[in-house]
Picture (cartoon, helix red, strand yellow):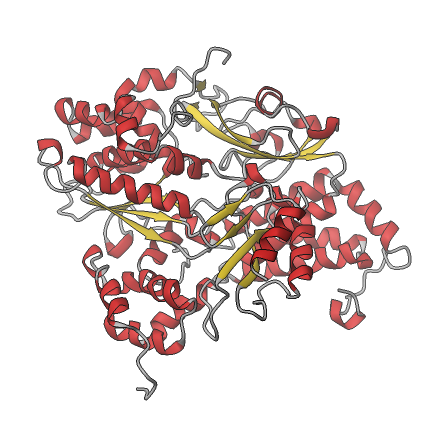
Length: 161
Length: 451
């Protein structure tokens, strides 16, 4: 199928296989498997898709079909060490989230969806992060930044500069 | 109303409210013990039916009735999916429950699974809730340790496993058959119904999909009974034989231009005005209100003159909105441009349409392109009719799409333009004085150098 070097480590393979008993179908492990790889590699290269498909007795195209649907999993290159989503949906929009994202992108020197040159930050827009009482908000990795001010955003960016 | 004490949010201010120890100290898992000691599965279904509980996820379908659609005497397995893919703009009540009181949700889930004869439940949670994920997983682990999950729960002979399943940032996974497809490892394309999930759902088996808040309500109904639940809310409209009423407490998410945004609990039927004044501290900065979304952006718009709208399942429909939805109220002050609102709404739905049905995929993306053109000062009055044509023709209600996402995309268009047409016309005339009356097709935005 391919001569590419194996990407999934034994640890990743074990982590993926641990999900199999939870579901009556191996295909249901697709999303958990994509998360296992993405959590570790910050992207899911095509070779990983091929290897996930082998573990789950699927055609690579089935895994790739699911992967591409979500738009969440990057494939070409890893996202930054920190991946941050600035919410742009209505509650945040009403509290100037658009200006916040634009400010942050300008300061970081990237456009939404891009990664800074030092590889430390990928900045994206997010659709409703479900933290509307804290608008405008940003989810950076596993940290929710609430009622984010320009000053706080600047400090966040400086830490990753 | 005035003497209403929070039920679902009763314990969230207690320190470590997310732990089993605190939950048990406030009476947690007593309902489970009571049901195992006193009730059959059929009794519990009857109790939930009698309570009038309607699903809290958006559609408001009667929960007990949904459970009775499962085939009788089915050899199994029957699956239960807890829908924690909360993604409707403005909505965060499930997040609060999962972060601050996950055991309440899990106790309700165990009871719901017991009633529906399910031994495997999938807790499908959106990706963007890392704290809720950790707390629910920790709570599930605590339940296995305490014997509330696993084999022979509390000596009842009933077995149940709960598995968390993590989404990947796609709004459509909150649609119940989209969720099922996603859980199966496929693209989250909603299914044509029938068959309904109760007959053929996940893994080709009968399946119940219920919302997080719905499960939390089940816990309290099991403990305090149907009459208690029906003592809160709005009785059926005598003029409407199809209205089953709106009973029980509800979590309202209030955000946007209010002084105190937050998740507040009240009996179903509180008005938008009451919500803003009693809980929200009024419109922020001493300004006046202009409009509000009544229940998540899919439900459309109320004008400030319509804030007497009661937020029960039948209320917003009487004000030309789609419905109560998730009861997420987003308030806009007098400075908000409806052009900006509709651009934001169009942007959301164009991004989140799953692409399966052409009317939705094309309708939402063209609505966005038209709104971008209007915003950029190239709008024409005829564009408002084009937007209405899209709004009137995409969705389950006109019969052109498989799921309700398109109805949700349509409602802001329909309410926005029909309730604020003059503002749109003024904006178009002012920003495009030489071209607003054009009716000829327009070239794409990039061809005219805007954007």
